[in-house]
Image 1 (tube, helix red, strand yellow):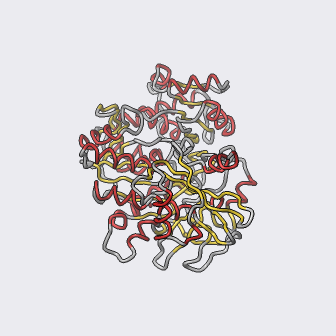
Image 2 (cartoon, rainbow, N blue to C red):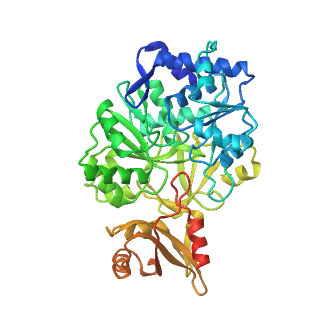
Image 3 (cartoon, rainbow, N blue to C red):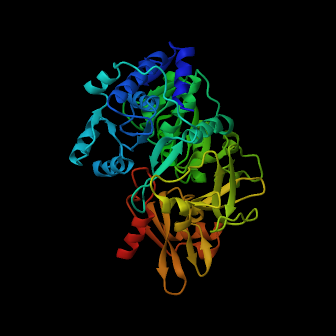
Length: 501
């Protein structure tokens, strides 16, 4: 089923309901949203775009993003969202690899595509040509699409090479949307979803269930993440849901504590996309209350592997609450989750191994990349590349990416375990642990620390909380951790720094 039908149903049932906002300003009701999306579809069809064709979105967060998004779906084409933080040449590679027939781009980003010599048409949105498109003769109804048809072509972050295109089907996105309602949070017409993180990723992928419920969609005027703006908009709209990376949660907490803001109007913050350290989420819950839900997923299984409920995140009474808080929760409703070996064979509960998942939210494969697909989909399971274990109650604890695990003297050391301990020191702002080659032990542990480094104090923390062999053998103070455009720490660059030293 074409999920543009969800927009049609909401628009028919409640055409006057407010839909799209830029800051506090109403841009479109659901009736207007639907009419403009169908008009964009009509304009795309007139340009020769057909079902199954790819159309890219290289845009900052704005209401026009969703209008273009649903216009693409209405004509039956595949949405190819590109992170607005990418360099023009990186975006151009995605446009070329996807075989996109057209790109919608924000004005400054359109210029970078021109510099990168993109050969397909680039429509500036918002802009005069886009305005002409949303006044075009509309299509009557969305083009029919099957559950197995590609809806969204998502390109991975590519920290170790060129990004790969994940083929997300309508079945995947439908299952993910229904799992959100069952496993994460209810969505009501009175709710508001606030796009403070890139709409090309987790924030935007959560638009569908809010469209179906008839909720409001608010894009900050800043186009991104600004704590003061988030506090202001949450108080204005009330009952606000937003998606945030762990680093954003930490910044929001720090800003709230500094300004005295308690997050009035914030109902749910879903966090995902990287490790959330216990110290940070405990601090956030203490300040804002039980508004946090954790999701674990990846492009290959978007937002759909496990969930840690707001009750689990806020609970301090269960005997294992700290361990549960450090976990990524339990399997979502539409998938099976297991811990397996390198051959995709499930391991007994409590055993360390690779997190595997199968079900309706798992991709059919990578776009035009049979070799990578075969390495990732093994014996019916998606091999996530994340190492961890599952306890007897079904809570999955993710320790690290398999490539980041340190093996010292034959013992496995998971960097996150060491990082959690070091972050207990209030002088440590950020930390990343990597392995350094060692002639006798194979590897030894090295910690890159943002903040004050007191070796004696940090050593003592480690000795009090983890085995001695896991203690860092070296602490390197650094002004900032290298990160990619999605906020993930680039441990490959940290290893390169070690090699250079």
